[in-house]
Image: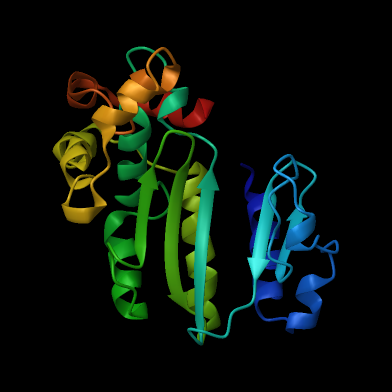
Length: 233
């Protein structure tokens, strides 16, 4: 993504977050009544959500919410998940997500940690990301009472979008954590039945592209492979 485009996205979202709720429904079409819905109809959208699209095809969704107060919940949703991995790439989507959170070309890990601590943003809880079959989602919950914090939060989203750094030394440190996601995805009631998913999706690409990938790929992938997957996606 180009920097100018990302900055324009930032401005649009910040503007709408601070706008009165009456402005937030201006672009919405009248929603059908629940009794009028058919299974073939598009999924209805909350009428309080403003939806827009830039010339390059990037879409944005904005909704004002008074609870919790003085907080912005930001998401960067990338339509790239494990199902787009080629043979020999199983696990790269997950590892790319891990590396993005460890720092970028313009935002080293130490700077990200320092910002989070100064703004009262808890890493791992208010800054996190996840990979699924069809998407990678970066999340941040940030206070809005300080404009500089909001601006920095959007800058971080921009960095995740196209400035992730793939230094080989950092990759080596992150391999184990990336593959550990398989175990972490199955904890208590949140267990994801991947064995059943593989059986249900047998014969499709989904059966061969579990989000946590293959151990041998995660353990041996090189910086240039991650950079290529990140750029291509």
